[in-house]
Structures are given as C-alpha cells and as structure tokens.
Picture (tube, rainbow, N blue to C red):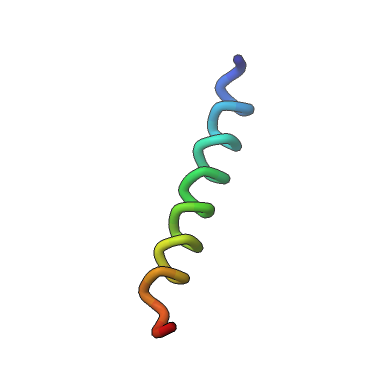
Length: 28
C-alpha cells in the first residue's frame, strides 16, 4: 500500500470515528 492511499484510509477512518462520536454524544 502506498503512503498516499494509507493516508487517505487513515483520514477516512478518523472522520468516521469523529462522526460516530458526535452521534453518540448527541441526546437521543
């Protein structure tokens, strides 16, 4: 895996975790 594709995968993973955390912190 190239460094560029690895960076994209990591960025997408962090964004997914951030969105998931926001949904978990939202009331309801």
